[in-house]
Length: 368
Image (cartoon, rainbow, N blue to C red; front, side):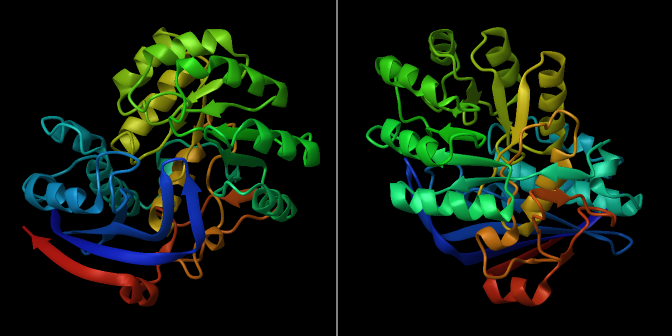
C-alpha cells in the first residue's frame, strides 16, 4: 500500500457549553483532521487531538502541524506500507509528539481497514459489538453538576466522571453522593494534589469512587505508588502514561489499579493495543478516555473500546454532548447507555463534508 497524498485541515468548532477542568476551560475546540489517500483512491481519516494551548500536554495544534508537515508525512509518503503496525516503528527516531504521530497513524489504520474491507474494530480483534458509555461533567458549580448528572442519567449513561481540585472536592462529592448514592462515580484531579494532601485524599474513600484519576503530578509514577498504599480508592493514571514503558513501570511499582488509555496520548492505536494487552496480563483495569474529540477520533475510540479489557465505561459520549453538528455521518449516538460498533469498513462512519468545510480554517495537501 502506497500513500500518494496527505491532506491536513485545521478546523475549529464552538462547544455547546464551556468545559472546565482544574487546568482551565475550553470554549472552542481546534484540531487537525488528517486525510490520507492511497494509489487506488481509497481514503482514511485521523485526528490530532492536541489543544490550541499546551495545558494538557506540551503538544499544541501548531506544534502538531509542524511535526506532521516537516517530519512525519515525508516518512509515510516515501515508503510502502504492508500493515499499520509498521508506522509507529518508523516514527521511533522522532521523540515525543505522540498526538501528531497518532493522528497520522490512525488515518492509516482506517485506510488499511477499508483496503481489506473490514470494520476497524473487527480488524483489531474487538469482541464487544456494544460498548458502555460514560460521561464527563465539566463544571465546578455544584448545582450545575447535579443538574448535568441527572440529565445524563436520564439519557442512560453508565458512569459519571467529575472534575475535582483543591477547594472543590470533598463537598462536591458529598453533595453528589447525597443525591446519587449508588451511581458509578469517579473523580478526575488533573494533577491538582501532592503527597501533602494525603489526609484529604484519604477522606474521599468514603464516597466509594470507581477511581481517582491522576491525583498527583502529570509526569509522576513513583509518588503515586506511595499514595496508592495509603488510600482505598483505586488510582487511575492518565497523563503519566505516555508510552508502553510508562505503563510497565507503573504496574511494576504498583502505582495504580487502573489506566486510562487515550490513543492520542500514547502515540497511536498500535501502542494503545499493546498497553491494553499488558494491562490484561497484569489484571489492571483499563478504560478509554476522551479529549473533547470530533467524530473521527471518537470513531477510533469506539474501535479501541471493543477490546475485551475495556470493561469500565469510557468517555465515549454522543456527538451531541459537545457539538451542535459533528463532522461524521451518522453522528455517534448513545442508546440506553451503549454505543454500537459500526458495521461498515474502516472507522465505519462517513465524513460530513459540508460540515467539515464549514468549520475548516485552512487546508494543505502533500503529495508523493
